[in-house]
Image (cartoon, rainbow, N blue to C red; front, side):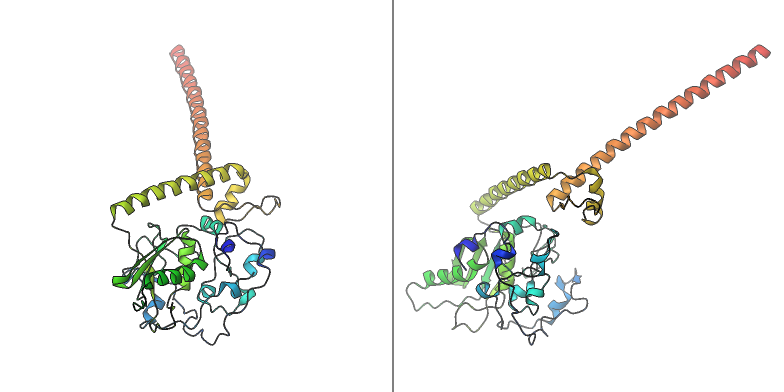
Length: 342
């Protein structure tokens, strides 16, 4: 995996991927990974999914994703409709049996993918929650940044004088293939480390790909990969606030400019709000709102509806006033005639 592909910002095309995605597994190890009915249901009392109850201890994974061999185009890349497609979780774990027939992406997330995903879902399409699980595993929280992952149970060979430098190189080599890394912090006294990625999508992919993996041949127990707690250091908190403000400002500016440049016709907004489908009668409009862009369009549509309701209510009130005036004038004429008769 070259440095150029790691720092790629835009989504690669089928021509750039050059090859179909290969089948990573023959299906012999799918019994532990196969879909279980009701497994997607989340128990709010125990903070676990249904399939979490079957996990017993930590076992070294028998498969691992190798981007240099496994990356390729799938049915998701062949789909030209522009609909949002998620990444294959089994591809990240190195055990997808579908290969090029898979309906999810078999490649590494880019900056464009990170900007496109909703904060309510992770890069694999799994629902995120308001709070982290107690053990900091799972899909993460949409109220947190979720760019830093925690590595535990690290194997550290202290017999070498430069063991920290060697461990840092190994961690960088193993995790940089999933996306650009901003910082690596190792705490040798506790055999733990923290890896901060530039994009949330990269952190989510790396967490799934490196779960139950080993970094050294001498290591018997797999490493623990979880979401990191917030750093209590005041300087880190201040830097995080500044970074969040900058990211929010950049995201707002980018999405507002996109919304202005690609503002859809009013007749198509209802179609996009109801089901995220474009107007089938207008083949020229292939624009589908996504994330913040969709919220801006929906707000514009709601404001326009409110203004129309206000106008219609004013017109109806004016008509009511006119009818009241006519009835009052008729009553006055009737009373005057009655007075004359008397």
